[in-house]
Image (cartoon, rainbow, N blue to C red; front, top):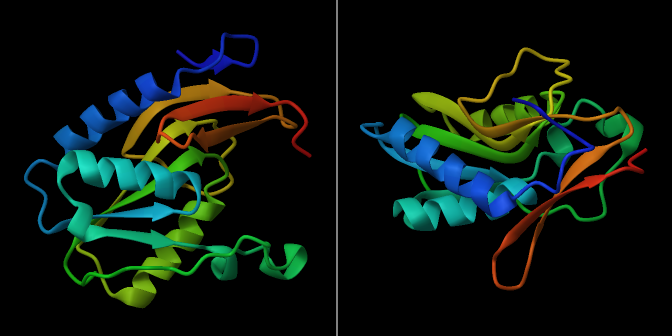
Length: 174
């Protein structure tokens, strides 16, 4: 059942535990699995998933800044990080991880970037939350919760120094 912005704060740790179980089941028997997180929230989740699933040696990160279809309009984000994919993508089952699935444009950009590194056998998508509002035909294989928000709102994942996650609703996201 979707959560609305009037509900209590989302329990990011409980959502992470649910996502971990879904991913663990979904990757069982996968050929040559690897995890790639989308900076920044997806990267945090990917790090934890890789550690919990014993896939730390097959962990990578992508920054989709240069692959976004609105790059010319918005320019380069201040916090650009380098993409790091230290394993062979060819033939791998890639679990692409993002914190919040919204329009699908970030996912499209990440897939485009992945294919610059090789041709995976399969790409699966995991997200902590799906807020709907798709502009592209993108769906997550694994999602911990669905949330209904107003257009000006955003879900914001944060990671504390001890690695614990919090997920808040930002009511002033223009």
